[in-house]
Amino acid sequence: MRNFQNKVASFPLFIILGIFLSGCLDGNGLADLDVEKPIGEYAIPLVKASLNMEDLVEEFDDYTEFDTTAEGVILFKYSGDILKRTSYDIFNSIESSLNGIPIPIESNNFPIPFTTPDGMEIYLMEVSEGSIGYFFETTVDEQCTVVISFPQLFDANMESFEYEVTLNPNNDGKISFLGEISLEGKTLIADQDGQVNLQYTVTSASGEDLLLETFFIIINDLRFSYSEGIFYNQEHKGELDTIEIEVFENWKGGNIFFEEPNITLTVNNSFGVPTRSVVQTFDIHTVEGDVIPLQGEAITDGIDFDYPEMDEVGETKSTTFVFNRDNSNVQDVLGSKPLYVEYLVDAITNPDGNDDVVGFIWEGSEYSVNVEVELPIYGKITDFLVVDTFELDMSVLTEQAIQEAILRLNYETALPIGFELQLTMLDDNGTELGDVFLPQPLVVQPVDVDASGEAMSPQSSVNDILLDQDQIEKLAISKKLILKVKFNSTMNDVLSVKVRPEQFLDLSLGMLIKR
Image (cartoon, rainbow, N blue to C red; front, side, top):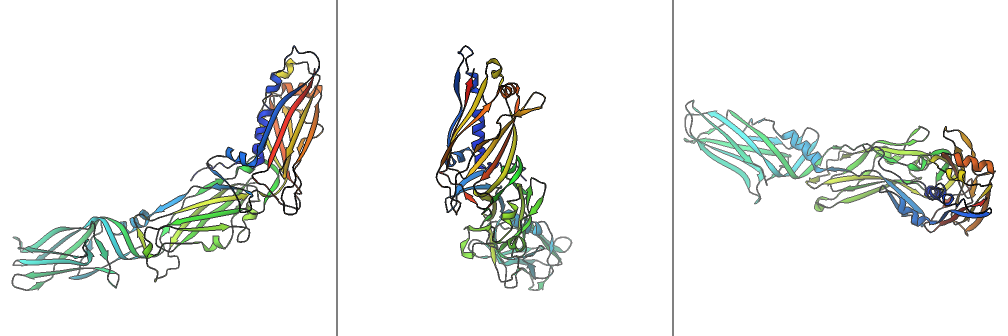
């Protein structure tokens, strides 16, 4: 499990705000004031920024992918880890069920079932390494010839295995033999009954056919490179993973409604076996502490993975399933102020137990599962309140004989999302000293939109906010600022708006000083 390492970029305007504040809170312009200047008025630039959404996406981290929808709306994809499972998991199950277990041979034509305890019927296996050890013994008073054969064990030339040895009885009147058959590079092919047969003959020097009193085999260090058969209900265990949704990390109120959010499950599969997803966990955890499960038929019934056919060994087939507002509750759960998505997806082979489906697994077979949360920036923002705290050092103001200051904001925007910004001053003890922007917050208005939520003409504005002597003195002794930002989209109670890469916000903030 990865604990919240999938850092997700915040909603685009948060980055605009961060850049804005980094200039505003530095106080570099004030630091350049010269106390020797005569009494008068001075304009000090604090922030000047020209930003568009396309430039901002470069600020995002490695876990966030920027894209656009087919309609050109900004789309953010937040990915979980890619889970992979290989042929080792199934081959290890087969090998473990056969390796190191003595098998007594009870007749001279003994069928060895080519099945495993966990429900696989194997028809063909290509062996990369391993051996069959065997021991036999019987009482006899003359020389004997023993022939051991595996009619279903073939070498590279497709010749079946046969071994012949002539033995003389020992002092106890018995013949015995300990041998080994190398399986490296050989192929096992089951007969029509799904079995591999071990056959032997024992012929005495006088021509009598005998049976062995003791005969057993043991399979050692078996490794397969390819197998065909019916793979009943083999489980591939997934791993619990999380995708963090950082947009709600500092949420204090309000809502964001995404019109067309999706959760996409992508599977790449080179197992030649019918396989279906089994969702153990797919929950959305919210800022309010709720845990809401993703719901839909695909969660309940599973998703069938595409797989290569028998003549497509080595190929990979991809399956993509999108949980959208039409087939699941994804719109509700991603509109519920999610902090993170937590999921665990297993897989099961031949889930319907179909005897007619013969599949294959080869040593390079693997499947991978990837989950993405997709948020097109198309929706409504209603009083979405973010609160954070910043360190502040404006002590330079104490060195200036400032009588009055005006904060002047000039902006031009093409965004259908605006915000109100307020800064509350705190002293050394954390006591609130009052707000910076009075009598009302600093406001950047969103542009008008048409009936489809498309932003119309850019608009501009100039805002002046007077800081009186009392505010200047409080700002000078402030050590922290509480940042409160409330976002709203145009016509947020009735209409979803679309944010596109070419939309922009140009702004400048300056301080007019009277000394």
